[in-house]
Image 1 (tube, rainbow, N blue to C red):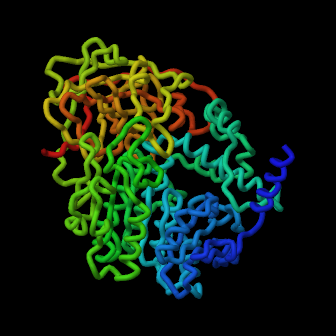
Image 2: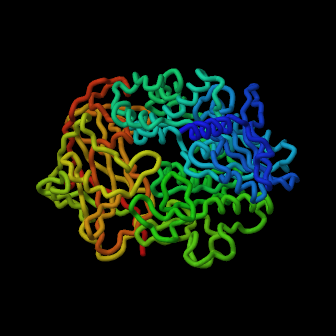
Image 3: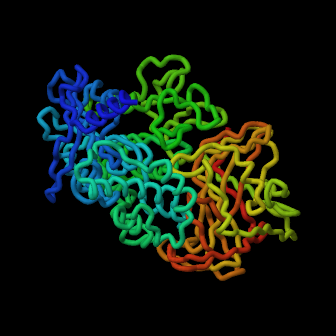
Length: 615
């Protein structure tokens, strides 16, 4: 026991020490906490990794709110430096080792100033690229429209195009992600204020007990705007800023990347996964920049790859999500692609065709065993689930996709798997006027389970599909492969006993053994059915059309498989529960049940629109 305490003391001292260049691997120089002064005088700190061989080199910059310290002697930063780059990793304002007060996502000016500071470092040759995922993708996309003179190229993985559309998806608040993220950031701020002598150079997250409390108590707290878990209002006030702006207004324009697309002048490689909750934003940034970037060079040099991945960065070993194995080709060396992308722009200036893979690809490795000579001219590469293979494309969404309606039908009722809900390309017959009803109780919402948060999971949905408050519509077994690649929309004709409520839609691929593998989902808050800027409550009992963005997928439904649509009114805690009262958002402490109706009569033919690709 005494030896263990001594070891713990030694490790603690090592953790508090500031590593010097002498502690770095022999082939690298690592400088800790290099200071950069922003235009308002605030000092941000970065770690710099560079080859020991010296010389002036191009730089790769990552800015992060999650601690610049990777906590390992063999991180991505080490490996990128060994590939010949100066790698600069900076704590964003008010996070970890950097000074100032954080304003989440307000990163444009600091990004500009940091890029130009990096370009002036004595060992940098003036060329700077930015890389990173999620928040570290956002900071790239907020800095680039300001046109930093020394920014050469971007590699954003998993980004949003509009922060509003990330926070209020279909008008529903992203409670699961928003609250857990804000609580995690609050812990860092609390430490810096109450323990100023503490070592802040390392990520600090929620404890196991706090995560249990998050699941059992904090997610269910009402009203949303009165929660004080971990003194959230004091240490992470940005969370409450979100709650005060449930409609799109001027608060959100700072974070509207899509509105800034015409100011972009640099190439970008966009990476995401079919199970990434920021899939929609990444797709929108690629297609928006390809159409609207400020220069022909920038428009021509947008690239996109979408694989069978979650929110996490894929590696060559990333072939499974949960219990689903997508095959050997699903693995992908994203780090190698980052190196090749920036070598291309830093070393050749884009004067030669870009190759996303080395000239020789081992059979069954990386992105396939076939020749890659056609890929330099193909700006899009997609992984088709079901058939588990890669395919090159020229655009997103695919122009040859045929929007194909699949109509909702039932006779006895579509409640749960015990019902007779059907999905068919045949429209409802004249004279038929059926509808399905269910009761939505905010106190017993449909659980998100593993399907939510930043990384969704292709779980088997059958347990949820047993619930009577979930309407289930299933197609007949397919006799031929049916490819669905692109954005999906559910058009529902609904009525509710409530003044405001939610409707959800989720798609699954039902296999011959009955497994219902989740693909994608979406939600609409009824008051935002017509506009995200001007909410309008329902008239109870009146019929309305609502359109749900069900996300996007790239999936081949194989022969013998069936397509399944779920319709309900909650997906908790991924989204907050609509209390059904019509009260102003985040202010209500009470909930009421709502009687929900989904029509599928000829004059109100609810249907799913699938982007079917001709085979």
